[in-house]
Image (tube, rainbow, N blue to C red; front, top):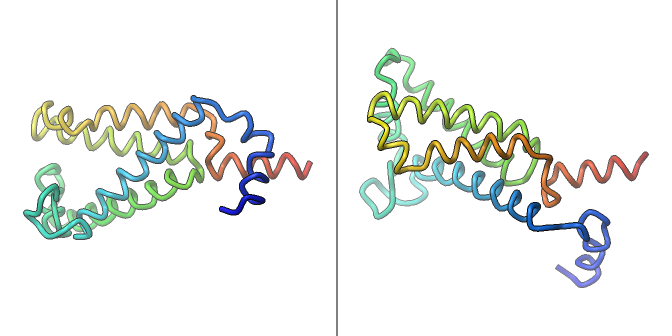
Amino acid sequence: MTKSVDSAIWRLPRMRELGPSDLAAAFLRLSMGAGLVSAVADRLGFWGPPGSFLVSWGNFHNFMVYTARLNPWCPSACLPLLAVAVTIAEAGLGVLLSLGISSRVAAMLTGMMTLAFAAAMTLVLGVHAPLIYSVFAFSAASFLLASQPPDKLSIDSFRELRSLRKE
């Protein structure tokens, strides 16, 4: 960033008021968004093929097998649609959270989705699985983020500031 642009950003009143809670909220929002996008990247094979170090699925087929395992009550004809819908939801929510667009709504939907995921994991695999993968913590963090105003580093906050200047 050039010096003039950098100094112009810090002259914005809200940027001068940036505090630890804003940084913590931005870090939470960004890490949650990155976590969702990373999970999608894994099932699309971007982190490597199946069996690679730290790769959970490695391809969409393996993710569909996992989806079927967590949803034994779902008709097999619906499983591909469920896997695609969850992937699209995770990708979209991950991008929205990463950029800070509609942060509160995205965080609330992420919390509901991850809570449903944690419940399915608990019912099928037992409580240890969602605990070791921190699914409950991710869900709780999503709900916490949804209860907060947008952090000052989000696009939501910049939009709000811009609308205040127009008034």
